[in-house]
Image (cartoon, rainbow over all chains, first blue to last red; front, side, top):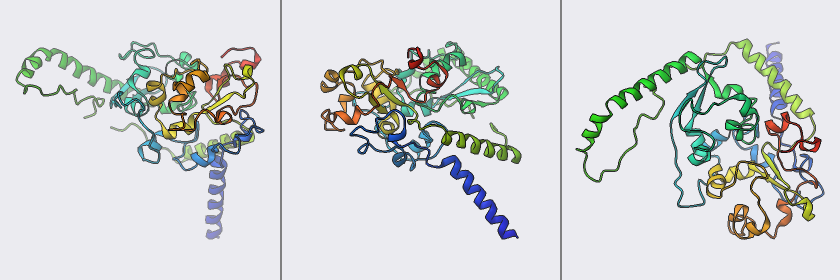
Length: 215
Length: 141
């Protein structure tokens, strides 16, 4: 009896996972945009052949691209122009603190692993919290975050991936960050005087506390 | 700091049922291109070539977004780059890699020009494509 139950559970779970992940990458010949009679159809790589080996996800390409990148399963080249530095920024921005949805945590790190600063700044976003009039109306029309999310990055059906932090927690984090910035601004003059004592020629280091005030 | 709360078991069960249901919708629908496949048909149809299909999934396994969108200057807009074969042969846009050195060279016309004739320029499966009026139905993308 108990064996039967175990087997049933196993069968149900296998079936359900198979339904959710059953090689849903359409073949190129059946994807609706490739010409099934074209000469390339037998030569091009099938999405399922490449993507089924990558960390899975429930939306978009069914690939968790950040996991794929960070786990080293894929090693995409960071540049082709050797003059452009491969810049990263580890700084979370908290947005939409008082809405009816949970607040948004925007992780610069995940974005700069793929993109360059100039891709968003300043033509899509001014680098100042609250200065951009971000709205879902515009995003759904393919502007702001919607330039990528809903076109190539995870789609706009994945609300909770951005709206991921409860409002009161985000409000507290932002309040801490703002207090810290105010402290820095107030102590800015004396700090500058202190930096004159720094060894000559030492490279100016960026502040190390860019990590979203968690400490 | 606790940002998530543990899920109640009934929630997981509900999520599973929803996932299976949504999964079955996805498979029962008609065949679809891969998310973020770009069809570029600015000049192809008029020139008697099949439209170009650019698969983002294939390229992002090998290159980060910034390679094309920062180094090579591709705008974030399907069909918004005024790409033509003269520029490609000159080493611009696709031609920065499709030169027989990094990737296949331009003689392999059909590998890129592989779309169904008459397919309009678009980002396939994009949210805007799903919500907005289709270009065939009189909309413009």
